[in-house]
Length: 215
Image (cartoon, rainbow, N blue to C red; front, side, top):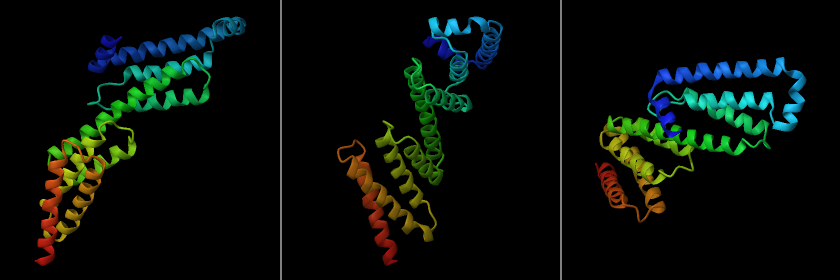
């Protein structure tokens, strides 16, 4: 299964093949139920088979399988999450609910990873304002993230570097924002491996603000 997932993530051709096959399966599924409608009640009673929930699940699962690497466009991931959540809401007693929730968690982690990578890219490109905003969005959209400490460190670093490269009229405000972020970080993660570096950002920002006030 893991090998199949890797192949789908790395090969556009494989994802299109899955889309074709899934579409064909769904078509045959609906045709099957229509053609054999006299047996439908018997199948539902003895096999737990329902055309509606099966079709909805397969549609969502097809998008899950088509979800590529986090580096690529995540349209299929978002569609899969929406459809899987719709399935859970529509059929809360289905035996597939647990699987749906696991798939949703996996896809959300992929979206989170992409969002962090985008923010990191902005920072590495010295687009510090965009980086700070992107890190903030990650924390808002994924409050349960396990990477919160690192994200807050990078956000403080980006804000500090933004202040340093700012025009004179904006430096005071941006250094003040750095102080605020640094205080928040140190309050949350006093024993962090990044604490000493954040303290430097805080100390220098304080000195810069004093200099600006006296200048």
